[in-house]
Image: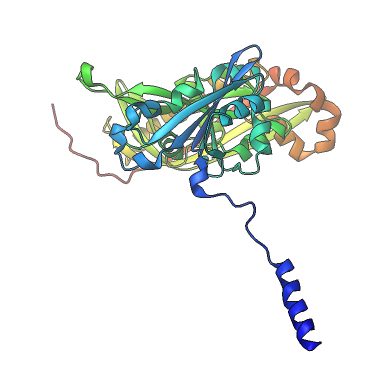
Length: 386
C-alpha cells in the first residue's frame, strides 16, 4: 500500500512539470532593425522592414549594398502592402519564412505622404505590438521611408544603425516622447528629418551615398505641418533645449565669425493673463565657451566682449523669432505654451483656452529674451600685423 501511494505521488508530480511548448528558436525569427511606413494611394499603405542577414554580417560596412543585392549585403529590406497598416504587416509576414521580431527595432521612419495624412494608425500598430520598444527613435523623411532603409551608408553595416548614431548627436525623439507630445494638451510634436546625401569630395565619379539629419519637421497633432528650414531648425533646438554640447557659429565683425560650444542651456516660460488672454515671455539662458575666435576679439576688452555677446543674443533671437512666427501663423505650438498654461492652472485652461487654443495662439503676444555668457578657454592665438 505504501509503495502504491509512493508511485501514485511520483506519477502525480509529472502533471506539474512544465515545458517550453511555445518556444521560438532564434533560427525561426527575423530581427527587425528598422521599420518604414509609407502611404502609396488613397487606401494603400506600405510597411517596410530592414532585417540583418547573419550569413553576411561579417561584411564590412562599405560593401553593404541596398536590399541584399548580389547576396553580399549584411541586411535585407522587404515590404508589404495593404488597405491599412495592419494588413500591410500581414502581407509582409506572409512572404517571409521567419517570424518578424520587433524587440530589437532601433528606428521607425514615417514617409512624407503618410506624415501629411497623419501617422496615428501607424503609431497604434507600433504600440499594440507587445514586442515594440517605446525607446525606439522616430523620424520622418521627405519622400519614401523605404528609400532610406535601402540606403547604403559606409561607416555602419546597417542604415538603421547609422541613423540611430546620428540622432545621438542631435535631436532624438522616442516613441514614448512622441506619444506624450501628441496626447498632452497644448503642445505639438517635432521629429528629425532623415535624408540621403552624397559625400563632399572633388571626385565627381566616386561620390558615395550617406545619410544626414540636419533639419526638423513640425507637426500639428499627428499630421505634418511643415519641414523647417535650417535656420528655423536651429530656432526649434533653442526652444526645446536641445543645444547642450552643440556648436554654434554666428557673425561678429565684417565677414568674421565666432564659433562656440554651448555648455549649458535652460529655457524658462512665464505668462500673464489679462481679459482671459495670456501673454508669454520665453527666456533662454545659456553659457558657452569659445571654440574659434576668427575675428580675434579680445575678451579682456569689455567693449569687444559685449560685442560678442550682443551678436550671439541677436543671432539666436532671430532664429527663435522666425520659427515662432511661422508656427503661430499655422496655429502650431512647438514651445508647449498651452501645456505650460495647463500645468500652471488646469481648471482655467479647460475653461477658457482648451477648446480653441490653436486660434488663440495665432494672436498671442510672445516676447523672447536671450541671456548669454561666453567663457574663453582657448589661447588668444597669433595676431599677424598687416
